[in-house]
Length: 485
Image (tube, rainbow, N blue to C red):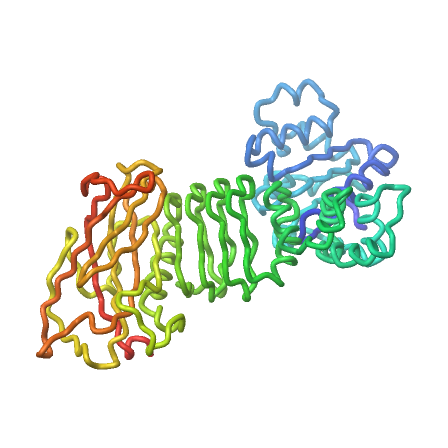
C-alpha cells in the first residue's frame, strides 16, 4: 500500500462482515503501528441525526487524544493550519464505518491527503459509487461458503456443544440456504429457530425470513437477504410491520404485495410490472415508489390501495395516478371473467390514492356527484366492454370505524370504500363490465351517472349525510375493445 493513501473496504450488502473486519484491523494495528487513531462507527446514522460538525469533532478529538484545543472548538476543521501541522507529523489510522454518500465522505476526508507517511484511511460502505472516485483500492467482502455457513448456523441454532440429528441436518441445509452466506442473517435465522419444534422448522420458508428481518428492523440485512429471499415469492404479507423503512426491489414474479399500516416505510425501491393486488393503506411515512426500468406506470390487475399515504413525492403521485388509470382502462385484459359470463355491473378493478384531480383519460367530467352525457354507445355491439368511473372525494369527517360505500347508478351498483380514517382528498377509481346496461333505439343516448355515499356502523346502515363523504368531482368513460389495442 502506498503512503498517505485512502484504502477502502467496500460491500453492497449489510451484515456481510465489513464492520467486523474493519474492527479487527483497527484493534490489531492501531496501537502498534500508528501514533494516532480514530474509529468512527455508524457514519450514516451519526450524520443524519447529529450533523457533520459532530462527526468532524469526534474524528479529530480521537486522533489527538481529546486535546483541549480541539474539544473546545465548535466546528473543528482539518484545514485549520495548526491541525494540518500536527497531521503532517503524526502517522494515523482512520476507520470510517458505514458511509453511504459522497458528501459524507468528502466532509470527513477532505484535507487528509497530506497525512504523515504511512497513514491509512479505511472506509466501509454498502455503495460502491461512494468510493469509486476517491479510493486507491477497494475490496469486496464475499459471503460465507457452504461449510462456513453451516458452522455459523449450527452454532446459533443448536448451541456450541450440540450437534443436529440427521433429520435436523437436512432441514438446516434448506433453511440456511435462505441466508445466501450472509453471517448476520445466519445468526438471526439460527437464533430464531433455536428450540423451535419440528413443525416450525419444517414450515419455515424464505418468506418467513423476509418477515423476520423486516418486522424486527434488521436494517443491515434488508437490501441483501430480503432481495435474495424475494426471488422465489409470489405473495408478500408485511401488514403492520412498524419498523422497516425500505422495501428492496421486488422480483418480477411477485403478484401480491400487502404492506398496509407499515408506518415507518418510506421507500419501495422497485414495484414489479405485473402485480395482481397492491395494498399499502395507512403507510403514513411512504414517500417514494419507483418502478422497474423507470416506467411511468405499473399494471395492477385487481386494485391499487394507497389510502392516507399523504407524503408521496410528486414523481410518485404521478406514477400512482398513471398506474391506477392505465390498470382501470385495461382491466378487461386481465381475463378474470369470460365475455360469455359477464355479470351485470360486476366490479373488476378498484383503486384509491391521495389526490384531487380526475385524470384526463376520463373523457366526461363534472363538478359534484352527477352528470348527464350524450354519447354514441353502440350498446348492442360486442365492442363495448365496460365502464370506468372516477371520483374525487373527502371522507375525513367520518370516524375511522364507519364503513363507507360509494353507490353509483347508470342503473345501480356500489363500491366498498372500507373502514379507514381517510383524511384530505382522495381519488377512487373502478371498472365494471356491462351486459345490456344501456339500451337504446338510436346511436345517441343520454346517460345519467350519479354517485352518493352510504354508511354502515356496527353492521347497521346509518344516515350520516353526504357531508361525511363529500364527493367533489366525478368522471366517466366507456371502454371499447379498440381502446385496449
